[in-house]
Amino acid sequence: MARQEAKKDVVIIGLGWTGSIMGIELAQEGLEIVALERGRDQHTVPEFKYPNQIDELRYGVRFKNMQHPSQQTVTVRRSADETALPYRSMGSFLPANGVGGAGTHWNGLNWRPQPEELKLRSHVRDNWGEQIIPEDMTLADYPVSYDDLEPFFTQFEKVAGISGKAGNLKGQIQDGGNPFEGWRSEEYPMPAHPHTYDAQKFYDTAKQMGYHPFTAPAGIASTAYTNPYGMQMGPCNFCGFCERFGCYQYSKSSPQTSILDALKRYPNFSYRTHAEVLRVEKSADGKTATGVTYFDEATQEEVFQPADIVIMGAYQLNNVHLMLVSGIGEPYDPATGEGVTGKNYAYQMNGGVTLFFKEANFNPFVGHGANGVCIDDFSVNQLDYGALGFIGGAYWRAGTFNGQPIRSMALPKGTATWGADWKQAIGDWYGHSMSIGSHGSHMSYRTNHLDLDPEYKDRHGRPLMRMTFNWNENDLRMNQYQKLRMEEVAKAMGADSWQSAFKDKGAMFDVRPYQTTHNTGGHIMSETPEEGVVNRYSQVWGMHNVFACGAGNFVQNTQYNPTGLVGALAYHTAHAIRTQYLSNPRPLV
Image (cartoon, rainbow, N blue to C red; front, side, top):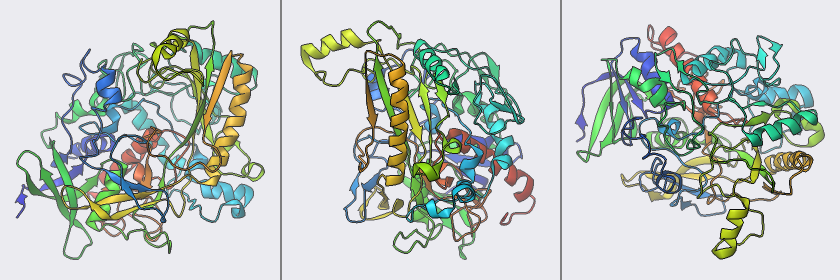
């Protein structure tokens, strides 16, 4: 029999961005809260202290801060005709492991989706008609609008400490910002960062070509800053160790820097590490949760943690798996289109161009994860889908984000990959290359989904989650369009040579190379319980005391990095619990 802990008002699964946000917001209500984190404890000091953290081999190559497949993994196949096999070596995506979650090792690119992205089916229908939507595309609107979420985007940006320049302030277009963004009620908390040489070269060329360049919005402090919780940030020193690394400088937006030390001061909050939640426990009638059962690594036993409210704040893949093994929501069946849990899994569609300049020295060791200049001229709300023959869009970014010698040695195609010729090429080209990246949307499809694997099990005897995913023609066409436009810019920049890396039409998903950790969907938001797993407040349909946060709520993936929307939805959910649910626990829709 599982050991039982004293009952809490709230149990939170996972202590990353969403778990930290929900923890501090609900702790302010005086609730007794416990958070359960599968991984290790992590603090800026000592875990991220200088110079230990800037070990490229340990963290950048061997993934010290990531979830190891032996802890939890998925099986992967591209279609129902294939046999899914376990993801045993870290490649395409890198889930985090430990307090702070992926917020400890992200690059810091923080975006709001465009208003049209949250009502994308309506945007397509109203402008081109639903007949242009591919038959297998499960395009949908969110049950919340940009206007609904705007105060919560602003709140998250203040807490995280985002640097940037508004492009649309209360409906007025601002010089230096992104003219194609949704309206903002306030300017960014901190000013935008200065440009590195490569970013400025891109800025100048894009401007000359009639595009609208602006500095990338960054979860990287450009100056000293104190957030609403009293947490302090220091200005970034452009060390180039953001992606895959914790920040020793207190400069990168992360739960450690922005929330956790303030949260830990609340006497009604506690957390346990090395506590892997195995399932959400249901009441006898299945209409509410009674708590969760977790595995205690220290004692090697199962523990039941009763609670009145369950907050699912684990990573998207882990949240969906936990729902499937706990029987939350009807599992999605792609053959019939019925069911909801595991539906609308989506990813990201990227590409880029690398340019080589013999006479330029870009000093690639000077940069940060969200560094650079962007354009949104080929974004979701700027393209004519009817004329182009696809749905979606992308933003572009150019700028040095690390000059790490193992992972960031761009060389011209045809260069030897080892030996004396390779060494010579490194000497010739290090510091003489720059890149422009395209970061694109990804639609949801009937065939791309998550379910339980019928064969493979984890160490606790639970079925692994199975990912069925492949690239679709619509998104590949969008990617090829970005390539055509980007190559025009590359030519105009006057490089000695350049090379493109975009997926071609007919490309198949390859799980081996890293792409992004922007896995989305699986417990999507919806207007009705027949369409998704959670309502507009991230409350599980049919289980009113369970709330599921994170990118699993996305109905399809936006063109942007997901953290800004994840943070806003978490604050939207916390606000609903505080103002509507606690006084009268019930379904909020």
